[in-house]
Amino acid sequence: MNNPYNKHYRQESYFGKPYPGLVEFFENYSNRNVVLDLGCGQGRDALFLGRLGYKVVGVDISDVGIQQLNKAALQEKLQVEGFVADIYSFGITDEYDIVLLDSMFHFYKNDVEKETKVLRRIIEEIKPGGLICNFMQKGNKREKELKRIIKESGVTFEVLLDGYTDYPEYDAEFHMYIIKKLE
Image: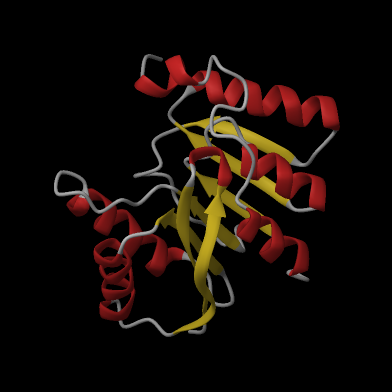
């Protein structure tokens, strides 16, 4: 499969380590459940979560990234498995307790429609008690857009985390928004 990320993923750990805020949240979250990591890339988050005892399914369009993820998971004997698929059409079944979206939403003009559509689908399909964990580059406009879409869904969520974390590898700050579906 040919896509732009295959070129980048030839470099090991292209995006670096998981965000410190992501690490802190999941190390302290007591329910080691099943995570769906949409847009998992090379698996930096999926492998980290697997090492903590989570069962993780990673999905990405990059066959190079998924091959790297599966190889590392097999070597470390983790309950982590990656699949090459389109995240915009991948189904959210009752099997998944947590949906992780790391840098999947930007809400740029050309992407806002498809990103809104997939977010609405995730909101609808995640089971009650399930978490949606979104990490995206800090930006007032995109943060407001994310929260607007969630609010307009009519689904009730409890906000578990609404804050920021540093991303030292790229000298950036990321917004963390973790919500739990109540109904």
